Length: 411
Ligand code: HEM
Image 1: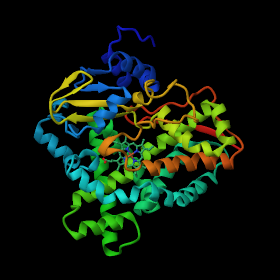
Image 2: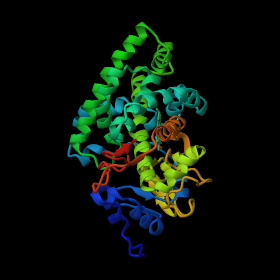
Image 3: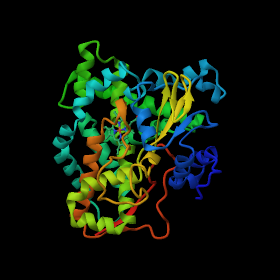
Image 4: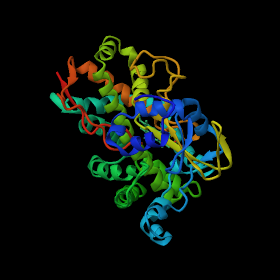
């Protein structure tokens, strides 16, 4: 795309959010916006930034926080009462992801120790076992998205929390419906489906909570139930919200790290060969996969007070979108940013966000990505595209960027 001074950032943003072409390849549009409109107020009602430093400083700045859109019912032609009636679920069950200090600090503090880099390292043998169980079954052409990229993260967080295997499969489509609420241009149908799915997930977890109350076991669910029982640190709605967040946050995202990363490696056979020859590059390969095709493309905050970003004045309540997928291709931070290069060192990508909401599961997600790439290469001498002329398509969401399917031949 030509990056002339006559770019219309709002038109580019609309292409990104609303057109198949824009969703399929957002990067040239990010580039045009990033270079010519580093901060702009969109007609869609929010401010947008796409340079690495601007995104990072917004996400780290306490003058920004999590806010609810003002009067969201208006956008859907509903009254406030109708809205509260239909979507009470979302308000009642706000997780740390949607909260500000001090509630955010309290809830995150309760689970943080289960997600440190040390804990992720301790879990590595379990991740290896679960990965091998899955890839043992691989033979010939496999669609990696449902067979590995979706199932592994669910198995890992499922074991940590103590969600039985039978429940994991039932929860998967429900979680997909609820995480759709992260997207920007939601329809009422999607909101209804998300609210219904949220109630369905709650019912499953209420059952598991009751079991753990009766018979505590050695898992994160039992630990959280115990904290709730002790008194004032975690109420019941927060317990449910925390469990749903932990179960859901890990898989559409890690799924996309595995899927997008494998696609990038298959698109760049020289890089795949490099990794095959030298497994010590696996950490770098995962960082580069996270950077090159970020599983989470957009993040955001609301101004909590009057504040200026890149010369643009925001009023309290103004929403702002930080384009992580764009920040990760900012040439000010990454040389030759459109090149996929697993030997890069230096700046880490912003795929896990920044500041107080920095992804709690980052060490776990990284470990899962590393184990998958390593063990696929250990096991198979041939790993090659099996999609013929039909290039794998991305799902039609932009906040979470991931593939519908990824057929790969293993031998
Ligand atoms: C490649 C995989 C992943 C990516 C790209 C990713 C990305 C992110 C991002 C960008 C945020 C920040 C959201 C914000 O600023 O509001 C976040 C938050 C979070 N992530 Fe992840 N995530 C991944 C995997 C996981 C896993 C495996 C878990 C845990 C099971 C997890 C748990 C969380 C939690 C609990 C938060 C909220 C933290 C808070 O609000 O303080 N994530 N993630």
